[in-house]
Amino acid sequence: MQEGYSPVKQANLKQGLIDRALNIIANSVEMDFPQDTLRQTALQIASGIPVILVSNHQSHVDVMPLAVIANQVRRAANDYISTGKYPRKKAFSHFLCPMASSVVTGGQTQDITAGYINTRDWLLKNGIVTVPVTRDRDIKYYGGQGLPPTIDSMRALLTAFKDGHGLAITIAGTVEEGRRKKGGRSGKRIGLKKLSSKNLLTETVVRQHAAGINTLIVPIAISGTYLLFDPDERKVTLSSVRTLVRNLVPFSLTKATTVKVAQPIMTEELWADAPEDEADLHTFLNNRLLVIIASKLPPEARGEFANMV
Image 1 (cartoon, helix red, strand yellow):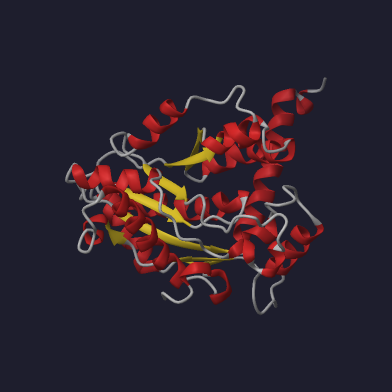
Image 2: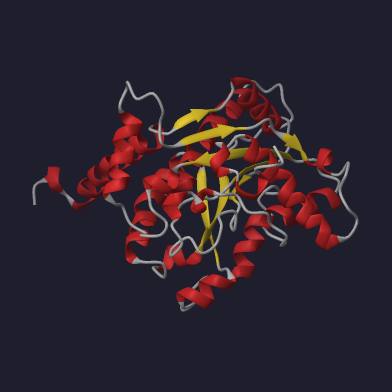
């Protein structure tokens, strides 16, 4: 085999083409990330304050716009850190992002797992490291064989801040159930749903508060990613292609997929009206943050929060 076509070079060429394609898709999204918000987030990291990026969840590709945001934050934070004027001296490398283990193992379909494999390196280059987490539904609906132990994954996520990393979380369960058979295209798929259960986000916030560690939360509103990758069909469809073309056309008045970053909030601010009961506390924290996200979504995507913003 000629040197120019060695397996290593072929693999590098393939990954390079994949990265270019993913850059095109990720940057086709209309992004509203105010410079003041970017600066505030980056300065908090440089000052040693833990940061959580948190968004609603519409599709398997939600992590892509999160990676675009993560990369901007990482670069800005390291610009501040490199001056030597801030408490943090070590460069900020990435955000840890929980990923359903059934995506990794093929339980949700081979197409989804192939997409995960092809995007993993690109995500890493943009400051996102995925951590497989086994949920109850991964075992109930997707088998469970060969799934990584939840306890190890959760330990890595919950100690992210001690290791100098951030967290990037798409809040699972924020899309109405029953979308597959009940006309998702009519808007049910995109409506935000109130949450009452403990999850990684609320557990992390409660732990940080108990430890007396103020943490910055950056709420992110994602709209239209289900058009780029249909979570019902679980594959790239003709609609996906049409959406991408619409996003890329320079003279398009509106893009189908938008991401808006809201004003960050410190966790201590959340405790002003927080209830004392633990169960009520997790409900309060979930929905307090989802109200902020809903305020940045189109009216038709606000779901159960439509009358609260």
